[in-house]
Length: 147
Image 1 (cartoon, rainbow, N blue to C red):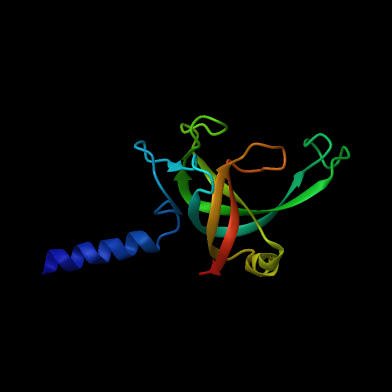
Image 2 (spheres, rainbow, N blue to C red):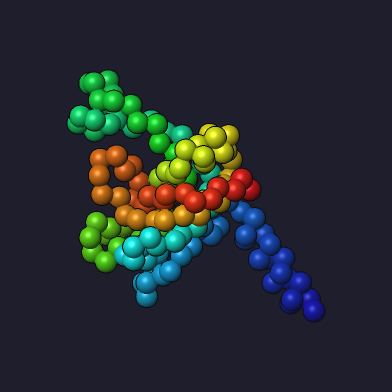
């Protein structure tokens, strides 16, 4: 009984600590990376939502030098993760802690209101492949929940 209470207490402590567990779920590869090789791969991402500014067109290098501003929703993960898209754009050896979130206009109000808070994002995940993508994993949100 004492061992069981200790184990349950430790689990509660570990899961309540920020950064204790990577919060990206979906189908996994044998190496433990999230598999996003399938069309419309469904993933869930949990972390703190931020709104960040990145340089956009024409050069994706510097807003000060004339590139357009791109305001982008980024989920900051509590721990590193990796993705595998079958060799197209992602490097499964690359660990990361940020995920870009995009979604339908109907979700923009919810996303804006959730900035700075812990969120659960569910949707289609894929590896970044353009200058408009600012994190290794991009999720087109179907659902946003504030935790």
